[in-house]
Image (cartoon, rainbow, N blue to C red; front, side):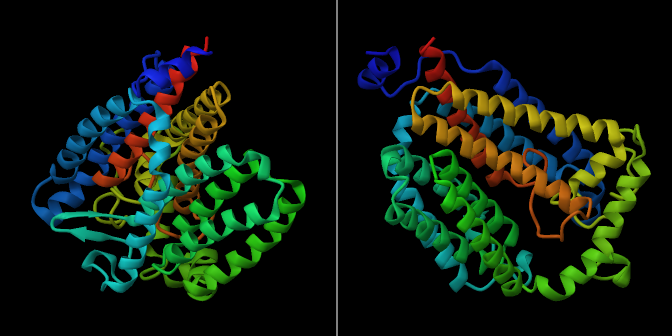
Length: 377
């Protein structure tokens, strides 16, 4: 009997050594993210709240709490979360359903993405991402011999489709794409046959066309993505200001704190478009270094997955790090106008306390898998 199995039977505490490389990449990205958040937000924060430190103070508090949660979760055997997979999934579905019934929050304008409980607010789509990762990892690892069964694949597709439909109705296309991609990747890694992959690819194209039609991307958003200068003071304003920030950064950047576009030119520069301020202040070289850090984080996560003592841990890790990699890539594509503006945050950088807590908690689970993997050595 392996050490990991003995440990699991005796305690739900992981006692192996965590992966220092993965932890280092997380902490470096978090630290750089906080620095850039302060630089990008202080002008906006002072202009609208008469307090330059409003965003960075709150984000720093959540970061400290989040790191503590991450380290605590890293000590818990990741198998512990398996028993809650259905509970988390149904909770996310209920929250997404409630979100569609309630009127939109003032900060959401014409969309319904935030659920408020008193002064505490969060996006249920963030819970839905983790719910799909946890549930699919649990189901596929327990039923991997049935990955050739049409009934089982159809069951997984129904679960994934239900989640995606509720998210796209918010509407939140970027989160829908992210959740759908995570589910598909986990099925492929879990042993999905080629014929299902091909059929799913054509189906995905049809669903994507339907989704952009539902959220209205088929007209104005596509038009102003292709030519943002067609409405430079309206729908194309944010994209144009983002591109101006990126271009003015040049190779080496203006220097930390020296951005000009953050002075109320790029709308809400501390949120989805923070990467444009990163490019302006750190330049092409700095932007490439940050992209490299994300790539290293994903690479190290996949390495942990390959060394995982079981299929559940491998799928769980792949899902969590793939989420970060794809979300970062989508955000950068939006900021550089490679794809239409869909509203997606940059992990570890964009402002949002609850999303940062969830993200760091997920990284704690990856570190828990790494502890178990190290016990196998």
